[in-house]
Length: 338
Image 1 (cartoon, rainbow, N blue to C red):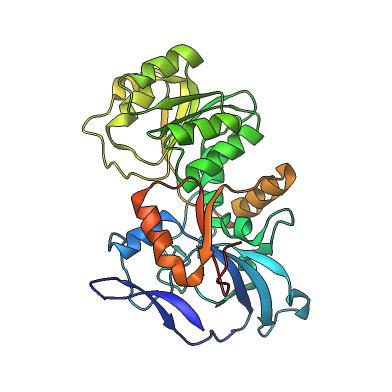
Image 2: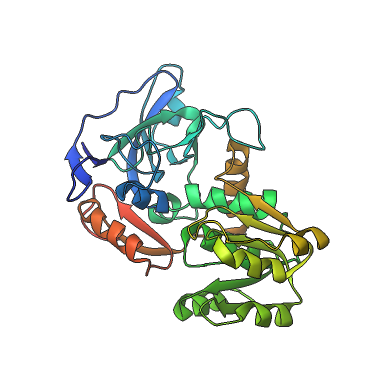
């Protein structure tokens, strides 16, 4: 079978290669993958910007497919079921934080970017029936990350003012969709006007270009401040967020692509009871809750493009360029885009 491996090739570390079909272990199933989706971490691994990279690993955390074989201890009722894969590995017993053994599917364990993958039965959940294969494949990692940040840490609910920063990314787009579905007053930022306009058409109450000097002042004047900010960039703009929070507001960040701020407005934070909260992908119970939320509201991921497996490197290049809006999806075993 074919799989996309991370290698030590200097010219192009990603190699689509013939690899052995996985052996199904006790308590596992074999999934024939129908579609997979890229995440930012996949590109970071490609660029060597991820810890403990192990060459020869099949990348990929997101995917959807059909159960084609079951291992010892697994009921035959699972055969031919359409499923999505929970990318958590060894979260642990504490729902508040991951264990020391925690990892994400696709590094160091083999991931979804292959024709077949063997995973534990506890990693599966039924594919949402209202979604296509491409949409279902786009859901797991980014959807779970957004759900935890928005609801567990952000305590988002109907009527709250929520700002989604950098709405072009996959997690940010799920956070945007989830917040709108929850009845919040949702506002977005981006450096791309086309992306901002798209969000307005999908229910955003307002939009702000972070390239515009003093955008946060305008946002505060128009909204009266925010109860929740969801961010992945960090950096010096954290101080802009602090200035536009309502008392007891919560800034939740699930990444730090802009690094650490040179200074932090601690006075304003303590005086206004503002919380600055880190967040990761989410635990197994939150994965189930996220899928239920998506089913209840009949939500569909925003998919930028779908392409065949043998053109996967072009999807990585699009992610690196950062011009896409929505998830980059690859169909497995099909040459035609659908």
